[in-house]
Image (cartoon, rainbow, N blue to C red):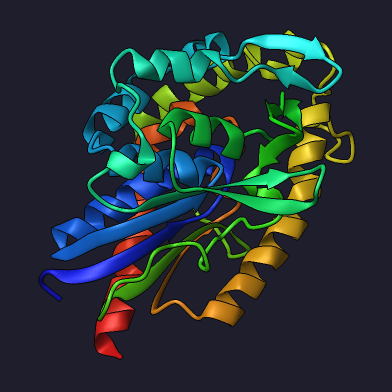
Length: 295
């Protein structure tokens, strides 16, 4: 498979999209050459950063984030159109990853957003990479939408969470899809005593710093899982829709390699779990590549 060209498509999925980094690293370590890349929502962010040649810097930053850092990056607004502006995180990223125009990148890149006024996809294939990423990640009612000329743009996952039809194909390439909304089982690896103690401390900190406490509107549902808070309710409500849309995309465009990450491997805002999610992506990629080679 050495130097085999790949057209790579990365799905939406919130923080689970960090697993895309592990997938990319595994593909490259096995000799695949990514010739073009496309994504929706978090998939668009990882795809954009990769196309800019800055995936290493982005990974390093993600690995440094703690729960408090994630919370501090959320610029709460409580406006009628969303709870979070979504600008602070991209401004922070621009401090170490300067913006570029999509048409000037080394490989073709496409990010998908949704035009909710005209009910259609918007494909960013030119202009600012950050503008494309910001529009593609605007989760309805959570992040404020992007007003663009005569329309309003929201998360690309609303219409096309796995945009297999939007990546630029090259002759003789392998179409690789990464779906982090897969409805498959997820089993956490066992930890040794030391790691377990560390995990328990982190869980305690998570409880203290829970976003629900910050927003005052998200219920704790540990005792009764039927009591869903605002963000959790949105997360659950979109899962089935995105899963079905992704499934349809896979059936229609039939990628050569499908890499699936369980939607139970993390929630939308688990960005402080970067190390774990990257390894989940790496492992899933390795297993899917092995299956592909055998067949």
